[in-house]
Length: 130
Image (tube, rainbow, N blue to C red; front, side, top):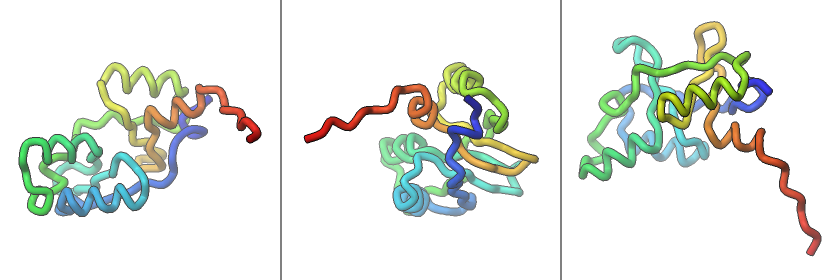
């Protein structure tokens, strides 16, 4: 199975000046654990995850004054839609992260998460009649 078969094509993209509270609200509303941060002034595409927000709040930082660009991972490992799920899982395990931005033609086409991969690999649950 390939990344294109597992990835979510709902890509939340935010700007670098979004506050962490704004980012968290958008991520919550879309039910996603990561947002692509598009910052042309800082080299292009980065990722902000729920863990980045959690770490900031845990440090006592104010989510209303902290901005995405200060918490964005910019040394991102990107996946291609044609990668196998094994390649994606290997990149995640090697890098210690749970989300990969999928680029197609240099543009974000989706995000694949550990959860997406597990959904594809785990057997489908059978509904037990009541």
